[in-house]
Image (cartoon, rainbow, N blue to C red; front, side):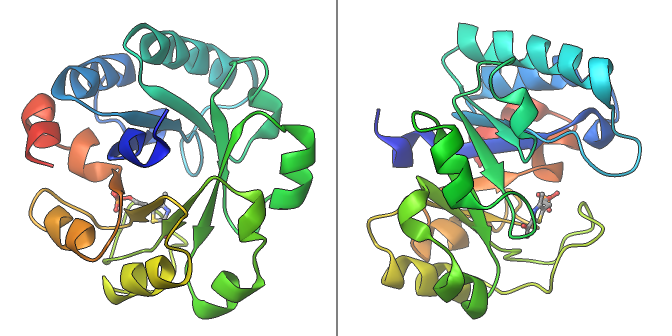
Length: 205
Ligand code: 3NM
C-alpha cells in the first residue's frame, strides 16, 4: 500500500459532526471517492461506551467493503475491537512510542501544530503526520491558532519521507493550496459533513 496515496482525501467524522444520519454521510463520501476515514467521536454531543463502539462497527464495515483506510482517533481501546488499520493521536494523547509498542502492525498518525512539537516528537515512531490547523476552523473548539500553508512546507522540508496531510479549515476552495505546499492529502470534517452535495464536494476536493 502506498500510504501517501491512501491519505489523499481523508474524511474525519463522528456523530457530533453530522447534521443528518452519519451512515448516509459516510456512504455518500465513499461514493464520492474518499480514500481514508477517521472515526473521531469526540467533543460536545459525542457518543460514549457501547453506542460509540456500535457506530464504529458500522463505519468500519463500510470502509472495509469499499477499501477505504479506517483509522480511529485517540481511543486505543477501539483499535482491536474495530480492527482498525491505525490510530491517530494529538500531542496530549497517548505517547506515540508507547502506541508503537502496543500496536506494532498498525498505522500511527500524529498531529503537529508548531515548531516545538515538530522537533520534540518521535517522528520515527509514526507512519504519517497531520499538520495544522492550516486555516481557521470552528469545528474543533480547542483548535490552536491557524498556521497557514507555510507550515506544510516546513514539516515536509524536515521530513520529506513521511506522508503528510493538512488539517483544519480546509475547503473545496483552498484544498489545492495545501497540496501545492507539499501535502500528500487533505483531511477535512465540515467541508464534507456540511456539504449539500457530499459526493460532489469530495470530487471537487
Ligand atoms: N484537528 P474542519 S483542526 C479535528 O489542528 C481537528 O489538529 C485539528 O475540522 C488540528 O475540517 C480539526 O471542519 C478540525 O475545519 C477540522
